[in-house]
Each structure stands twice: as C-alpha cells, then as structure tokens.
Amino acid sequence: MSVVVVGSANLDLVYRVERIPSPGETVLALGSDSAPGGKGNNQVIAAARAGAPSAFVVALGRDAAAERLIASLADAGVDLRARRVGAPTGTAIITVDDGAENAIVVDSGANGMLDGLDQAERDLVAAADVLLLQLETPLATVAEAAAVAHAAGTTVVLNAAPIRSLPTALLGDVDVLVVNEHEAAHLAAELSGEPVHDASGEDLAGVLSRLGLAVIVTLGAQGAVVRVPDEPPAHVAGLRVQAVDTTGAGDTFCGALVAELDRRRGPAERPGRTAGARPDLGTLVRAAEFATVAAALSVQRAGAVPSIPTLEEIHDFHSAS
Ligand code: RIB
Image 1 (cartoon, rainbow, N blue to C red):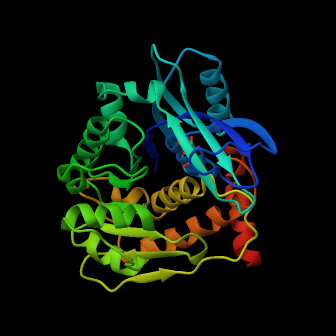
Image 2 (image 1 turned 90 degrees about the horizontal axis):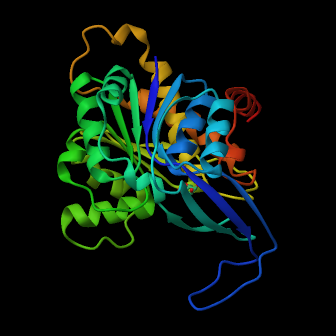
C-alpha cells in the first residue's frame, strides 16, 4: 500500500492580522512566522502522518528554504524524490485574520520547473496504490502523472486547487475529484459554459459527477458532499470546533483522505489490477469522515504543516467525539 504525491512545496510567510487588507489598504501585522507549506507538501505530510507510506515528487531550489522543507519532510517520514533546480524554492505570503480566514499569494519559483516526469518518477507513480495531485505545478506534468497512474490502475485523486482551467483529457484520468465550493462552482461553470450562482454543494457535486468521476465537495465546518455517478449524494457531517487558522485544512483533508483510501484499498487489489480504480461510495464516505476529523483538528492550530495531525490524534479525536 502506498501514496504518491506529485506537487508543490513552499515556504509560508505567515502574518497574523486583525483583518485581511482590502485593495489599496495597508495593515499592521500582530505577529509573523514562517513554516513549511505548499499544497503538495502539506498533502504528502498529511498522508504520512495519517499512516500511509508516502512519496513526494517535487522541485526545490538550492537554498535555505529547500533545506527547511527537506528536514520537515524527513521528520514526517516521507520518501522524498526532489529535483533541485535553478530557481528559488516556492514561497507563499499568507495573511490570517482573527476569524481564522486567510488570503494567500504564491510565488511558484521552483514549482514552475517541475516539467514532465522522468522514467524513475513514472515508475514510482505507476507502482503507487493512490496518486494525489493538485494544481500548483505545470498542468502538463499533472496530466502526465494522472495518465501514467490511470493506465497502471492506480487510484487518481485530484484536488483542483488553486482554481485553474483544466484540460478535459486530464479529468478523464481522474477517479476522485476533491474541490471546495468555490472551486466546484468555477469548474461547473467552465464545463457547462454558463456562470453558476447560488448552487448548493450537492448540486455542484451532481454537475461534476456527470463527467464520470467521483466528486467530493468540501463545505468547511458543514462537512462534505460525496457523489458517485448514478448514485444518490451522501453527506458527511462537519465537526464543531474552535478554528484559529484554516490554512492547510483542505490539504489535510486530501492527505488524510488518500491515506484512508490506501488503507481500505488493501494489497489484495494489487495483482492484475485493471486501468481505472474508482473507490465505491461507501469507501469514499468512510474516507471522507476520517479526513473531516483530520481537517477539524488542523484548524485548531496555527500554520499549515505545524497543524497537521498524526494518526493517533485522529483516532483519539474520533473516539472522543
Ligand atoms: O493550502 C495552503 C497552502 O497554499 C499554503 O501552505 C501555501 O503555501 C499555498 O500553497
């Protein structure tokens, strides 16, 4: 059993503010910090901390930020397949307000140089049980990884964040799409060619599942909707917690989700597996419940990587709630 993440890593520069500045406005920070982040990096650490043997294909610079990210990934037990490239490691400027909301600007740097996969990386992806992708790296590489995995029978999970236009061919290689409501509305509008206003998470999941893939729309404190084509929607309840910082909560959800899918898929399915490996509705719902607990734990702590819970913490919270 194993998870592979192909994606981004950033050093997050985090500023705590009373409120996120409006356009043209300057505000004074209440404090600041830096910590490992980036959607791919957060997701692979979430998968590893949730108990899945996890590998990470990423591009990093040759700088101090990269050394910090490498140390943090080693600490989480991630099998790191890093390319060191001639661009600075990615950075993100993050403002977090008193209401735990955030606004993020990413300078991609080295992430933009994750250009295509080499043979060793293709072999790694093909041998994985679950591949997890996001959209902070070149789309051609995301599509290539999905195609290699799909042909090998690896379950392909795409977190379509941040919002970008997607090639339709990419979605044909995806088994499970994970999006929040904003991302879901954007994709639904793009696919239907019309703006989508005031649609519920359930409606959006219904529209997107017509692509023939499973869809999970995350709804923050309201939980998530899980939809598999030709089946009724299922709801996963949210958990009541006191949020201090939602940065990385979606990444924690995705990483924990794939760790649980990997566990539930099991070694028995490996021999002779065929192309495409979409989990059934029941498996997706159980995995989304597990991921919801992990995300609820993460929002109670500051930062992206520092807030990601361990398997033990997830189990303890599960049995106490
Ligand atoms: O999803 C949160 C992440 O988005 C941050 O860690 C930041 O680096 C950006 O990639």
